[in-house]
Image (cartoon, rainbow, N blue to C red; front, side, top):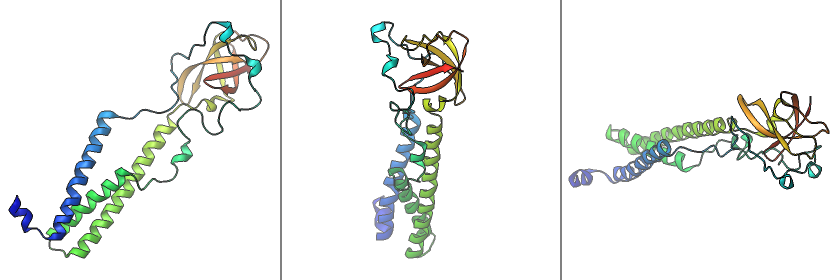
Length: 222
């Protein structure tokens, strides 16, 4: 091993010092990704049950304190989903993953070219071009992956203006919460709901979602 190392030129030694560690780091990143996975980072809404509000009337939501005409309680453009899909519209080129990919591809391609008899400068140039192209590819894949995760995260603001079916009777305004079911982003979901009107909404009634307050839908007779 020592004889082989000493037989290498200074340029090849540098390239091996770049290629080997970056390849090991890249393999470690891939292994951690496969073993660890990533959470959605989004709104945790069950497809089969909503979030129960306390039964104590004193702890029930007071609809008189809610602004049903606007969306002051819901940040504009974000709904507890960890971000806006537009946040990922710009390709993130300089990340640890893309830089490590560039170094690994640059190092090995340059080594192969030099070992094949090509002079140092063209070999390094070809390595740099191949590394940059692979860097762009990885950045694009990561960006697409993030967008897919973001699009799959439930955003309750998408429920506004949609129809729902009352599952548990929704009391009149200021009377507490009931539950509704609906199709949202391709999923059948159940949510807590409060009434914007003065008449109770009975089980089976079709309602319209007019607003969202926290994790609770504000509904009215459709």
